[in-house]
Image 1 (cartoon, helix red, strand yellow):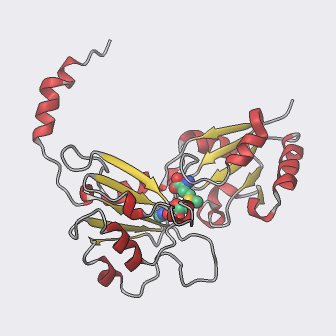
Image 2 (spheres, helix red, strand yellow):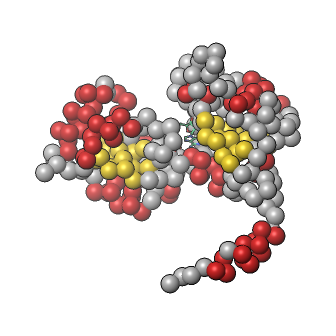
Length: 256
Ligand SMILES: C[S@@+](CC[C@H](N)C(=O)[O-])C[C@H]1O[C@@H](n2cnc3c(N)ncnc32)[C@H](O)[C@@H]1O
């Protein structure tokens, strides 16, 4: 019987954010597939393991190699963040069918929210969240833009941004007011993580010439920068909601 390949949500970069299940499964595997950025941050977990970079292979060759390696033992596949959003590995999971096991992890959205110490929905402030990427919206004349998602009460999370910041802000201003906060969460979970928070009116000046999106780089890979927009980023939670819930929801809790 063949072993299985574990697609481990490995978190944004910090190995402390591995789940206990992912850590246990990683320890069991001698063969590990991982994106290049993880070989240093995960070094302590990778000693004496055989490492492979998945992006070096064509799809059919990769599947064939994985199936052959599975005859000798289980395989760990480190998925940046978590598979839930913007993960390029779905085709592998589908092709491997029952050989594949997916283990959830900490996505960059979760890690950025923790860094900002802000929940992204807040009663009376933000009632919904939209995750989007300008890279995947299409290029045609009818393709949506970030302006189509911008609205008061929406927390917008923008992955893999490839639009220059002034242009992105102009799109966001189609639906948000000038004082709406925007955060750039850069390389979250890495030793050089940074976060910049300003309003849509001031973010461009605050960032200056700093290229958080690698737009000036010949390397086409998206930068590790998550853009978060919405009033909940700087709002203070209204404590009266606590008492309302205590009286109307929590006191009816049945723990049996
Ligand atoms: C291909 S997507 C992978 C997202 C991943 N599946 C997740 O759940 O975090 C890559 C994009 O995710 C965001 N991202 C991933 N890791 C990040 C990090 N450590 N810090 C900030 N943003 C990150 C950035 O927007 C980056 O361009």
